[in-house]
Length: 359
Image 1 (cartoon, rainbow, N blue to C red):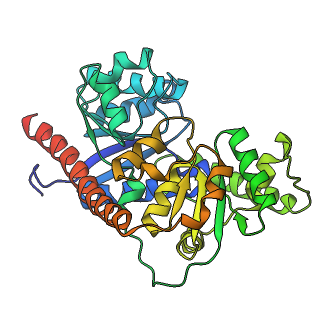
Image 2 (image 1 turned 90 degrees about the vertical axis):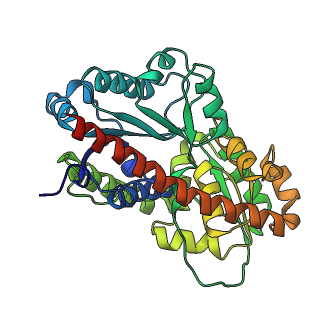
């Protein structure tokens, strides 16, 4: 039998976003599993994003029996969102039962009620310095580890870059602007970050397979139906979901390859910015619904990549290529992100093992 210091750590993961249907979330979850495995963790159950642990007695029992709980914060922990408050309550529950609970890969912004639960997390790892500062004002120390998509090492052969991509935003009016601009500029190709939910087994929730099967079937129907509609430049809100399916690239491999061979991308999506960084694709970014894009660009030294509108970004498209200095900043970020992600998981695993030895 392995000594406690070497035994595998039994972990529960919360806010699994892999069924949410976009490439950024899928890659985040892939990296969490990869990094956990490397650190000697076994994720016994991975709780879907909207599953309520507070009404699941078996899950509560599993929490009490776990070595550690991990909360994948992503873009959830802001503005006292109901889901954010649920994970704050989870941290409090874990603390009451002596189970280490870590918030990882998270934003933290514009909270009030949620702030009371911040000290209940054993340790907090946020994606940006602005979130770190917000927690610091509460007296809660937080470490900055860049978004976990940035820990992914993308390998592809070099090829000529051609054409510009344009992508929408989580903000409806921003997305409509992106589409309107794309229709007025024939050199732009509109692309969606949406994809289908993966078929998943072994995550500790029987609902995963059924839920994702339903989502996949619904997605394929929506994608097929999306080709039956017209998409005028002044896009009505009723066509937005259809537009996302019409211009989706379902395969993660093909999606990343599309970025890699493109001359540049203009986007209002945080994870498309991170995937551009991973693939070395020049970009301009439009602000989103939290400070996440601005904070990331400031951290990398790419604040000059921010544009206030899609029209401004398109007008600057001829200068979209990265400078040598920007390329150096990006390479340093990616190297540091990989190291910091591994260190974060190793540190969490060590807390669990130390707790086990002390028991």
